[in-house]
Each structure stands twice: as C-alpha cells, then as structure tokens.
Image (cartoon, rainbow, N blue to C red):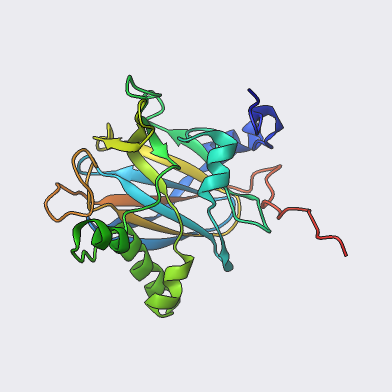
Length: 262
C-alpha cells in the first residue's frame, strides 16, 4: 500500500507565520448566518476568519472562491486526497486546476479532540457534496428550496448581481464544517450522525489569497436525523473576521507553476 500524497511532501504554511498571525489578530467584522439560509463574506489574504457555533449544534456548508476569479474555488476531491476525509488544524484548503494552490489553512479547531469515533465518524468532512434540491426531488418527489445548494446559489447570486441559474454552475462540493460523518464499515456508504459541536466551538482559517466565502447553515441542523428539512432543529452560525498585523514571511499563495507544453 502506498499513500498517494505523503504528508511530508505537501507544502505546509510556516508555523512561525501562523503563530505571528494569531498573536496579532484583531476582530474587525462579524457576519450572521441565519438558520436554513446562506450568506457571503470577504476575507483579504493574510487575514483570519472563524466559523463559530453560537446557539446550538449546527452544521455549516462552506464554499470558498478566489475573490477576483470565481472560477477558481475550493476543490474538495484534491483536499481530501491530500489530507484525508476530514480536516483539522494544519490542513490546507486547495483550489481547482489550473491554479492548484492553497486558498486557506486551518489554524485552530476546537473540535480536534473528537478524532475518529467507534463508527469511524469524524468532523469537518470533505467527502459529502451538499444537500441539493435535485437529489431531494429524485429521492422524494418533493421540491425543497432551502437545501444548502440553493442557499449558496442565492447568496453568491446576490453578492455578484448575476442570475441564479448562471451562478449555480459555480457552486461546488463543500467543506461540511462541524458535520460528523464517515463510511459504514460493511457497505462503505456515507453516513452522518449528530454533530458534537456546541456554542463557542469554532473552526479557524488563515486566508492564503483574497477570498469570497459562502456559508449555509444547513437545514438539517446537527444532521443527527435528517437534512433538507423544515422540521429539524436549526440554529444560526457566525463568521468572525480578524485583521492581522503585517506578518514577516507571509506571502499570498501562488498558482501552480505547471505549464502546458507548446
């Protein structure tokens, strides 16, 4: 057996840069994400943002884009291949080709104690796609308009002023922040269970480029029973944005140096 992407081969962010950034961080903004809705937020490169649980156990579906080119966005598959099915402190959030660069690095995770449970479940997965109205209709024959896909589409369309049908093509597989998931041991099917997140918990990132984020407070609440539902107990989330002092050694992440042969 061979690990496809050995951890030692993946370029890390300098620990001294992370420490210096976190020591100097000053909160400058806060964005409220209502239950069963999504909002966008902007983070300049070199700043820090936190996704925070504020009222009760709640999962968030996160999309990240390069703020100046929305076609460059979070690539869940490559992030999963690089770091594993679930991410935590020190892992990086990678963008799509041809750029393939870290959009952000996770710098703090108050749920890192959870690890993997007896069922193989962990938190902050980069496995699942996002609940979407097309799958909902396929499986149930009903139309539900607050799936995370729908929420993210509306939020990004509102931010950009572009039509929802056009923006929908930019919405991508998410990081399931706070969600507890895994694969069944017998059939290897994706499962979810109640998130261990509680008010005050957070997942923190250092932006490696100028970012546009979109976060949906999932209509499944803690996703312990169901998703895409108006019945599940749901709570808001908050995104906190922190300015950092000019940190020596930090540079905006550069795009891949690969070039097609001419």
